[in-house]
Structure formats: C-alpha cells, structure tokens
Image (cartoon, rainbow, N blue to C red; front, side, top):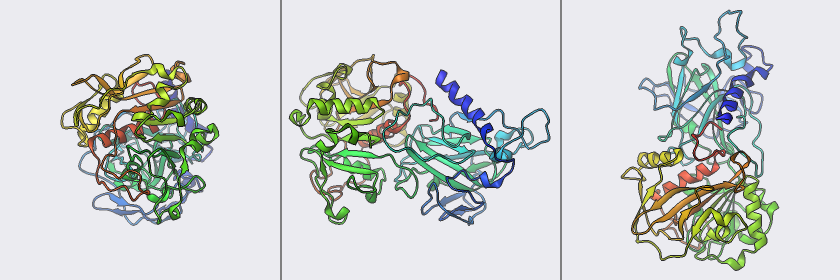
Length: 505
C-alpha cells in the first residue's frame, strides 16, 4: 500500500531531523517537558517479577528515582505483530560509512551483531485494566510528543506518529505486542495510543540483549486526564439502552463525566426517555443539556471526537429536523466518529443523500431472545473481531456470539460503501452491526469520518432514566458489550479501508 510505504519511510527518516547530540540524556525521556533522568512519580517496580504500578503517570509529569532495577521477563514473549524499525540507525561502533546515531538511537545495543535481541513485550488493556485490546499502537519515541489537538480532525492512518518513533508496532488479538531493537538503559519512554487515546510512560529500565516485560499497569489506556489524553466524547442518553453505563465499565472515571462547561472528557446529553441529570454526588446533580443542543449545531459537534447515541425506543423523527440530520452528515465528513444504537438508524435511513443508500432498512419484529449472531470474517478486522471475542470470553465458538434483545431493522448493506460486521442467518437474515466511512461515495483517500450502526441493545440490565451513575448497576461485560468495546476502540482508531490490514497510526 502506498500509505503503508509512506508511513514506514517516515518512521525511518524522521529522526534525522533532530538536533540532539549523540548520547545527550536530556532527550531520552520523550516527554512534553524537559526530561530528567528519573522515572515518573508513583512507579513501583518489582525487580523479581518485572511488574509495576503507577499512581498518576502523565504526559508532563515530574519524576522521582525508580524504586526497582529492571522490568524484564525470562518466560518468553507474547505473540508479536510486525514491528517497524529504523534501518538507518547504527550501532554504537566507530564505523565511518554510516551516519552517527542520534539521541536514544545511541542506546540501541548491537548485541554482538543482532540488535533485535533487545525486546520489549507486554499487553495493552482498556482503562479498567483487565480487558486486552486489539490494534493499539505501541512505540518508543525519539523525541517529545506534540500535544493532542482538540476538536474533530481527519485522522487517517497515512499520517506521522508524534515523537518520531524509533520502533513501533500494533497489539494483536490477544492485546499483546513485542517491540524489537529497543533502546536500552534507564528511563526509556513508551507510548500507548489509539486515535486520541494516548498515554506516555517511562520504563525504569530496559536491559540490553534481553527480553523485557513492560509493567502491565503502564500499558493500560488512561482512565483519567492525569494519566494521559482521552478523546472528547458526546453521549446522548436514551429510553431503551443506558449506553452511558458502558463507558464506566471500560474504566473511564466518574470525574471525567461533566456538563459541557466542565473539564471532563465525556459530556452527557438528554435523549428521549433517557437519564437527564447527574447524581447529587457528581457535578452537584446538574441537569444534562437536551440532545437538540448537540444536534442543532455543527459547531457544537466539532468540539467532539466521538458522538454516541443510545436507543430512544423509537425513531422520534419529529425531534430530528432536516438541518440537524445535515449537521451529523457534515460532522462525519470532517472526521467525526459516530455510534448509533437501534432506532437512531433514522439518521442514516432518512438522512441526506447518499447516507440512505448505505444499507437496506426495514422494520420487522424483534428476533428471538437470545439469538446466535455470526461475525463476518471475510475482511481483516472482521477476522480479528472473531479471534478477539474468543480470547476474551465473548464467544464460545469462533465467529459466533450470543445476542440478547436483537432487533431487525437492517436486511443487508451496500457492499460498495459499507461493511457488515455481525449478522444473523437464522431464523432471519439480518445485519446487527455495520459501518461506513464518510463522506460516502468519495475515494477512500478522501474519507475522514466513520459511522457504526448497531441493532443490538448493549447495556440491558442497567436502569434506564435514573441519574448518572446511579442507574449503572451491572458488573462485568456481556458478550454483546464486549463486541461493542471492540467496535468502540476500532471507531477511535485512525481511518483505513476495511479491506486493508491495520498499520500503526
């Protein structure tokens, strides 16, 4: 792929633009502020196990001396995915035919002619700390990271990773990663990111020519802003699916749920029949703004990276004007990421052209409860979903999942514009999950946004309409909630055509 070649070429050449002298330790941490030679406050590393914890690693945190010595593993590395390395980087020898190393590159040990013997492995988890995640970018930056830009943006996988990575890779369907040819020494920076989720940490030590294990708590996505960057999310509640509760289950802390004028990364809006206020111990019991506040303004949409809409129990077309529908289409075209649950299919079915052409919509009786859903494995990420669901206990049979309260509003998708992810073939042929990229109908390289439509109510069991988070009572994740977690982080990721393998981005 042209984009893949451009990405790899950039990763190989970008470090030559740095002006740091070889071995200058002031550039070794890769943080946004002037780095020091110490590890982040709160990191505790067990030198016997290589595991550790942190109490607030941030992109700009101050640091203390590490309490441990190594973060190594002698038990073999997890299954790895492809690692992007810099073929122009040199060993620390006296060769006169290759360019000199720069910054952290000077800490790549030659390991008797095989620098790839220095590896770093680990598992990336959701913010809650137990659910491994697929297609998360993990890399060692060679320099400071630029701040994450606020507001909707066109995030495609052809762009450059911040911090000029020395090595980069993606997690596999077990959430595992392995980086090879990693710089060794103390205070090695590591970045874990997907879309606008980003966490930068410092590893107390990487041992040269050995298999190192990253402490698992450091490779968890951030649960609050003190740990890293979280996308700005607008969540519309609904009277048939308390979807807001799922955001808590994936680990986003309650303090990140605030009114729009607050500092939190998640803002809740009142949809028909849904929760309409916070509980008294959160934001003083403030009322949610009405959904029309969001729907009625493209400028409001543009403040958000993602918009999620929980099923309201009906299409409620009278509350969604033609101008509002156009706003959502325009937002998607700018790079917006949108999740629509069940009857919010009206935004597509009765939206501006060409959105209605993306699928064949119907209104049929609900499917039997439960019903067996099938995962479409005919494209790379569909196969990844099937593998991942098996690994995390969401499936007992590869490519199948139990669905409760499945709906029947989509017969098929337009293969020219849309991708089917989950479907049923008995007792009816239905589509339970599909996606399309936006703007619809333009060449793939001109698309920026993404829409997910689901006929599955995901948060059944939690209480509808109660102040948030009072109504969120269920524990653990059901199979259909796990499928949505996969789709949620897939929706967060940089945009790439569904028939292509993902690349770091």
